[in-house]
Amino acid sequence: MTTPPVLVEKPTVLVVDDTPDNLTLMSELLRGKYRVKLANNGETALKVVRNTPPELILLDIMMPGLSGYDVLRALKSNDETRDIPIIFLTAMSTAEDERKGLELGAVDYITKPISPAIVQARVATHLRLKATVDFLRDKNHFLEMEIARRTRETAAIQDVSVLAMASLAETRDTDTGNHIRRTQHYIRLLAQQLKNHPRFGYYLSPEMIELLFKSAPLHDIGKVGIPDRILLKPGRLTPDEFEIMKTHTTLGRDSIEAAEKQLGVEVEFLRVAKEIAYSHQEKWDGSGYPEGLAGEAIPISARLMAVADVYDALISRRVYKEPMSHEQAVAIMRDGRGSHFDPDVLDAFLALQDEFQAIAAQFADSQVDVANKETRLAQFIS
Image (cartoon, rainbow, N blue to C red; front, top):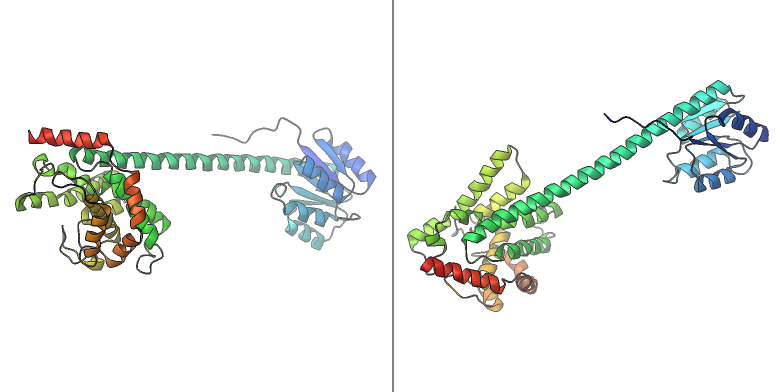
C-alpha cells in the first residue's frame, strides 16, 4: 500500500507581521525546523508568495495597508495559492474574530501572546496535513490520467475488434471493399444533419452519434453465415436463394447477441449494433425484412443505415451489376422517399448528397481491391 512521503527537505514557512519583535520571535522559534521567510506587511507577503510559494503562512490580521483578511482573500482567489494553509496569528481574540477568520479560509487561529509549544505543534500538524493532501491530490491526478489512458486503450481495442469482425465479412463478399468505411461516415453525416430535427433530436446525442459510427461496420456481419454459392453468385438470386440471403440480418443480430451474453453485461454499443444488423433491410412502407416493420416501428439507427447502405450499394460494383453514377443513385433514392426510406432521413441525404459523393471518392476501392474481387469471382465460377 502506498503511503504519503516523509518530508525530507525543510518546508518553507512565511511569517507576516508588522511588528519587528514578533518577526524576530517567530524566526527564532521556527528556523531550526523550517526555512523561514519574513514579511512586515501584506503587500510584501503577496510578492513573496508569488515568487516562491511557501508551504504554510503565519499571518497577522491588524496591519497597515492590506490587512490579514485582505491577504487571505487575495491568496484564496488565486488557483496557484489557494491551497496554501494559513494560520492567523493575532491579538484579536474574540470568538467572532476567530469565526470570521476561519470562514474566510484560514486553517487555524492562534492568539497572542503566543505559546511557543502551541505554535510549533499547530505548524507541524498543518504541514503534515498539507503534505498528505498534496500527496492524495497528486495520486488522484495520476489515477485520473491512468483511467483516461486505459479508457482510450479500451476504446481502441473495441474499434479494432469491430473492424476486424467487419473485415471478416468482407473477405467472404467480393463486393464490399471499403463499403464498411464509407457507410460509417455516411451514417455519421446523416446523424449530425438530423441531430436538431424535432423527430430525431432526443435520440441523436453526441454519444449516440459516436455509437452509430462505431456500430455501423457490423451491419453486414451476418453475411459470414451465407454460403458462397449465394453470396458470390454473379446472376440474380432465385426466390429460395434470396430467402437464405435475407437471413444475414438475423445471423448478424444473433452473433452480436451471443457475444453480448458472453460478456455477461448489457453494452449500449452492442445494442445499437444489433438494431442496425437486424433491421437495416426494413423499409418505411413495411415491405422489407426480416420482420416487415413499417414507419416509426423501425429503429432510427436502422433507418439511417438503410439510406447509407442502399446509396453505397447503388454506386458500387456488384457481381450482378455495374456501378451506377452518383446522379443515377440519387434519382433512385429520391424515388424511394416514403416507400423505402423515412422521408426526413431521405431529405437529409438529398441535402448532403455532395458530401456523400465526397466520402465515396475518399474511400473508393483501389485497383487492387477491384482486381481481388475479379480474381475471387473467377475462382468461384471455375
